[in-house]
Amino acid sequence: MLGIIFLILLGILIVLLLAAAFYPVSYRIRVSRDEKEMSLCVNVWWLFGLLRASCSYPEPGYIVVKALFFRIFDTTPSDEEERDKKKDKKRNGIKKTDKAQKIEKEKKRDKNASKKQDASAETGARPEAAQEEAAGAGEQGALSKLKKIRYTISGLCDKIKEIWENISYYMELLQEEDTKLLFSHALLRSGKILKNIRPRRIKARILFGFDTPDATGYVYGIYCMLASYLGSGVSVVPDFENKVFQAEVLIEGRVTLWVALINGLKLLFDKKLKKFMNKMRKEKKEVS
Image (tube, rainbow, N blue to C red; front, top):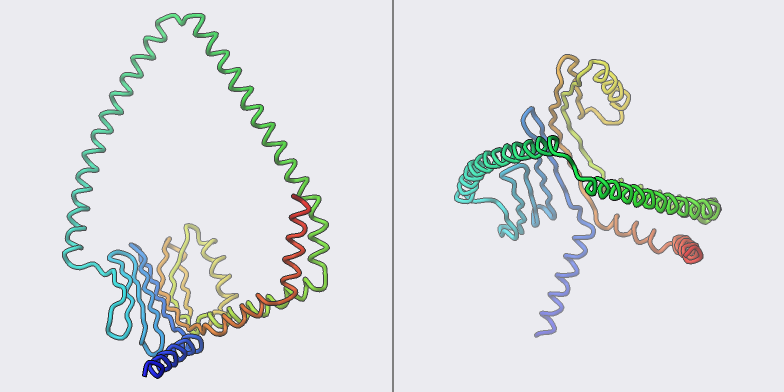
């Protein structure tokens, strides 16, 4: 009986692992900005909402993670907590104003005391011993600064010499055929990973304007050159008269963990990568 239960649990675990690897994780990101503030809302869900998470910014920001109808993690503030926060803000504001007044009074006292000391110092004659000590301290400070500058310059020269000596080795290493094949393989794998995680849908409405119409026109010209790549869902409107930036952006996509995992492992276990890393370690040992 225990063996059957164990096999059932093992089967459920394997099914969940396969589902996590092959079933995509969907995400939706909403960003909006107006004249006053910016807001952000992120939603992530997996397996028809069996597991989902959401977060929001700014205050009252929250993070919520749910499995079916159960809350696994929740930072949503209650009504009582929000009231306490408002009261604390008011108290802190009153305390800050009191502290600011005290600091201003202390600054005024310090200024008056320093003015009196300066006036007494100008009227009184300075002793010769104090003048000699001040001159000696100034000479010692100048010598210590010169020594520090000399040490820093010598250290920089040694670093530059060490880098210059190793440039030829690294250039030869980058020009090897195995290194070129490794870089092409890395570009292939990283391209597949980026294609997997890139957004499937982007919708944006942006209104912008700078201090000068010229800058607004330059930025709008760049957008016109890239408009075909951004798609019809992105709309950008320039304002040549006012300095403004307002935006509403919606990004939707999905990520399949298996694609990222298999491409990362293929790159990690590439023999050319091991050879390249061994050559880099060998050069570091010889330099040290």
